[in-house]
Picture 1 (tube, rainbow, N blue to C red):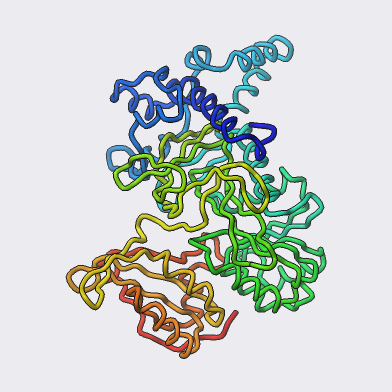
Picture 2 (cartoon, one colour; picture 1 turned 90 degrees about the horizontal axis):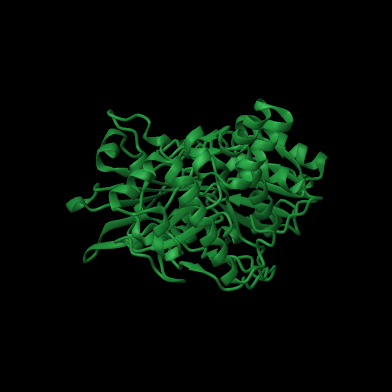
Length: 495
């Protein structure tokens, strides 16, 4: 990985990425991945044809569907794992690695040489996808890279080695918990990993934060909301940073949680956001906004020495800087598993920029903060007929509604008249006036608002549980018929 990862000239990043891309294709993907080797061969493309970043446009995009199991092939989720054998290693591995293996074998024996290869190539840590997609594998080398990438994310957010971090992200075989676990190791930071509400209840977490003098809290928004509302202000006396693991677009969330922090006694704390796409192996962070404008975001800082990001249109054509489209991911410097031109389903509505960050002055490419998802596009019934709505446009108003303790948006595909879509904002624990106010604000976007019992919505969203919060859910008409939505009901008490 590049030593000066965040201050290089953009042209140097491009040269580095081209070098890593050639290595990825020639030394890892083509020799060690049957899935990608078949794609190359079907297109008549040889590894030597990939020399520049633009050359990968010769290859097709892949998506989650390419890794879904079928009755004929239950192992499709494992397609992204690299599978080197002795013959392919000798033919394709870096000479420096082969020399190191030979030296280990000569000086320390066969077992030591095998351990060197295993550290480089054997997946020892795997993330399973609850909703489909490729299994992500990390070797020991990859876990070191994850620790370094995590430490970078904490540094971008302004955290230091001297900070004391409390991570309330839920345990599980996926990115959020393990990103912060290895981030603390990489940064050399003292950290408590609470496992959210399944292991340590909010009241206990607040007590421990007070005892340990916590300066940073990392949590999902719903858990953070309950913790800040219910704990005594002394729990957060030393808190400097609240880092939210983003379940969706977060515009408006900064102001909401700044208010929550001030009410809880954390008068000097700022709010930041971490965005983690599981296939991208490591989360991206935004640098702190100026205190005068808590709602400013300069975008998510990426790692050009670890990954290559493209933005494509609906037809899969690559787009230029700052153009809106779907993010496509290529893993440049990972070993356990690898992806080339993978459609993430994340829509960067303001694209990617290489402009120096106005906040921290880093020169890495940044994903603009205005994010959506491909499936969030809904066709709703308007006053003059069907209109297209991006549900990401709805979320800022919900984040800013500080009188609504919890909310969730449901997109019901084909459930309306003429098989149009229905978009419903479920407001947990909201007072009638808040429901009416949001209803008027969101009606022009074709969104219905309804109050639901707080406890029911909290359970449905798995707040503080073993999996990620569901802030936006997409269902088709058949699933909606199987589980009809609840009738409007009064709100419950906040956590």
